[in-house]
Image 1 (cartoon, helix red, strand yellow):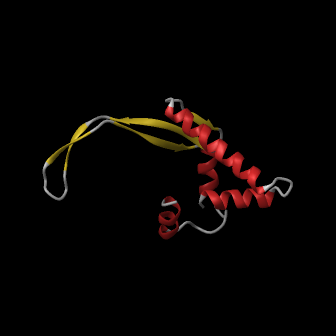
Image 2: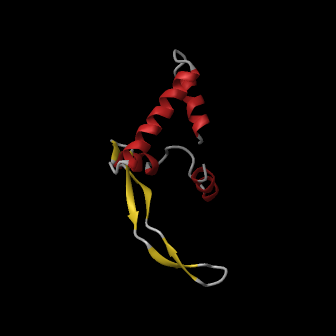
Length: 110
């Protein structure tokens, strides 16, 4: 699911809201999560999961084409840990169709 599909689904489920308002709400939530992560805060959504930032220290890497040593700068990457309720819902027997490898690949690239 991509952001526009999420907005369309939420607008469909809430006909009393205009789609532009739903879009503003979704964008605001995403921006608040991003801003919190940028400040180094952890964002926890009970039952869903927690977003945090992990530090990757600088290191010496290799250029795969030439084999030459390359200095890779320190960076910060987002990290998501699923919540217990989400894991249980995903793994509950009889909760719909199984997720195939193709489904997993297509949903992670969005």
